[in-house]
Length: 254
Length: 304
Image (cartoon, rainbow over all chains, first blue to last red; front, side, top):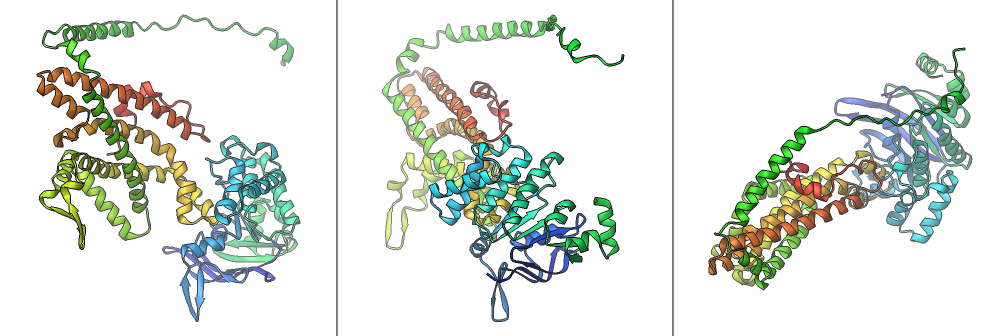
């Protein structure tokens, strides 16, 4: 495993004529907690979705653990990867969505078990044991047989985190994981994420929770208009921002 | 003091309301009129000298009739099974990123939904007129050996049903939130596994109710195969009736059995719906089998 987990070099992304990312250069180190802040439409979620190829990069290079995402490099030419190869890359990258996206026809336990069994080929008994352990870890040992519709938003998001962890990812992506939650449920999800950070998981978190970023992040990046405005430690970016755009954004959300 | 103590409030719970309910006089009056009309109609049929009721009773359980019921059920079940399989394939093709598959599926739907089933049945039955032998290269068989009346009927009904099921399945697939596909992709599911393990199981809730209607419709549509003499319930009833000059009686016999079968199917359908509704909240107010039976047409139509 290389010391750098995610490396973005001049990453661009356009939807039709609209350029959402205008040259992103970032490096996420192994074991780092990396928080992306910025107003809506700044491109932070799009960047996150590029990392596991839910969106295809239009220009520039994006690699995870030394491997280019979505492309194979043959000589000086890039070849698009086959869907199978892309699926294989995604297996090692966990993702947590704003709207949880749990599978509603499966119980919490089945949500966590299914991918290891059907995708990794893990034995059912082993996957079940692991799923029970993970659900216990996110504080849901009592709710394993509930369907997502029977769980609160915070509980659903914790199941979603367990589901992503079940694939033993080397990198976790969080796309505004607490934005769809009632305020009193935000804490329980952030607590699980803090535990995860403490255990050394490499995490990229798109969030509006400035408090979380300040407490947990190693690096904070402020994005606006498809570019990185400023990056650094929480002390630098959150407590002593250099740019006016960062200052005005923080003054509104803090 | 402006505040009241909680204790004072709970001590005198109000008595339940006993109001005089609204009287629906109009309903009672219209019910009486309907009963009168229905009774009159029933009497005019029951006391009709042109209908030999003893014959209806005698022939109701004849082996020919049961044989016909067997063929009707076999046609219904087999053509629905093949139709559902074909429909899923066509729907997935229609939604695929591959333009060739999309075009093939679109062309199939255009042809099979654009021509009457009766015409399709007759065309398959008469295939030997244009293709006396079927086969590839040196291997070939006599068309009339393969396309029996039953074979032609099954082929026509199944291929036609696949086109209608394709639209139902496509609607079901599109009803599943895009986030489900994204979540599966993010976990490393392939396209096929996403469809099979995540999207289709959720689409079932939308697919099953109209498919139930399709089964009931199919059961009745099989009567069309009497045009090629495929020995189904209606064909048997018709043949028997025309031989014995009891046509109308045999129509009543056939109608009775069709009603029995559609009633059973409608009851099964509402059970199946409950099974596929697990994990969702919005299921409690679905109409039951009996209700659906009387509102078949407007319950889940609009798929044509």
